[in-house]
Image (cartoon, rainbow, N blue to C red; front, side, top):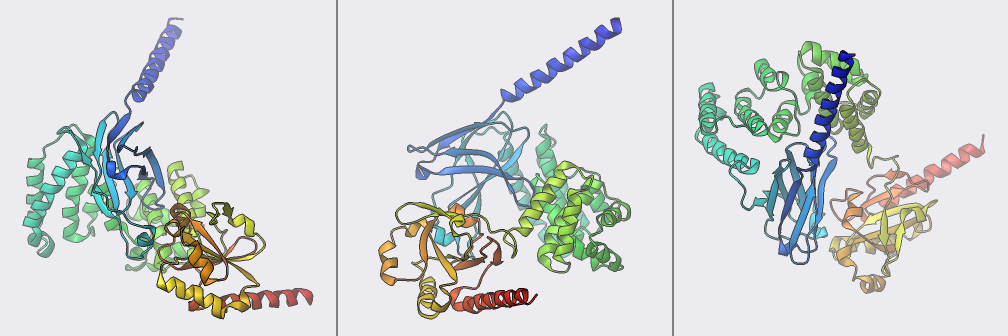
Length: 478
């Protein structure tokens, strides 16, 4: 009986501790606030990447900047989190710690239109959010100070490290940095330092050293949410299927990938390389992503590997990455389902692709302000009349051209013109105007992308109709 009472007491204490922990977590939210009058009316999405392979964005917070420029958001975080936000010309970054308050300063307003963003050469500029009254032990201040000092020391040792490959120079750099930044109580910062200094070691041999891999990847648990770890991981393991397959004796490994032999690939990394299962799994996921675009291995084999991962005994977190990666790799591929899309006419009425079921649809993202786009539209009017009865032309223009109705009516271009938002345009990963897709009557992507009007779409579509007619005649003869 006494034993039972003791057990109940222990359970009661554990339950109390658990409830206390929950309450503590709920009472320690992250708070961000500030004033950014230039950005009044903007909605800012703070996100972290769920993983670096699928590039799925996991929302951390969303907040509106009020008419007076003020903003405020409160939310929960369980751990130090590297966050990003994309707006106009910027990709802004900040590190957030549970229970901390942040007064953010936005970078200067640098508006970028939708047309500019669709320029294939456009890249957002990376910048750190400023912080007002941040304490000395703020993780952002610590990392910024470390990076500034590291850059100075790296420059002073540059020739010895990168040209003469001097180990003593690397040791000197690390010694100076460790002296300037002694051990702290911040575990995140200590891990950040460890892997950041590892980049100097990597410079000596590009990671082709067993002791380097053991020190930074085998003995330490993987942490792809930590930026210096992620950078080292990418430097060492990019295109790793190809690197391994092209090494001496790599033909056997190529066969494992070609046969989608997940178990054999795992065994190779875990047994031959002496890696942990976690590291092996992450390298496999990264390598599938790289190999899909690199071309040395068949895409079907790589997709089968992802399917096998989803049916394996891998941890749920890794299977989730595999699922997201498969969705990313197959997205917009020919023969996949066309993503649904909504847009508005010039009267403000909403429409969707669903309204065009049972028709061939030429989805044409264009800009009537762009001379090249207008040439393609003129070409449709003058040279593509013969196919207009078989395909519906849907011309989608950016919101900035909503006032162009009269111009469009005057030109009498064939097809229907609609206004589409930037977020809807992003569903089709449009990087430049004009861009086009051909969708079947069943809602399947036939050409992804399709040729633009002057670049041969007429011939492309004629071949589709010919093939369809051949199939019809074949079926009639059975």
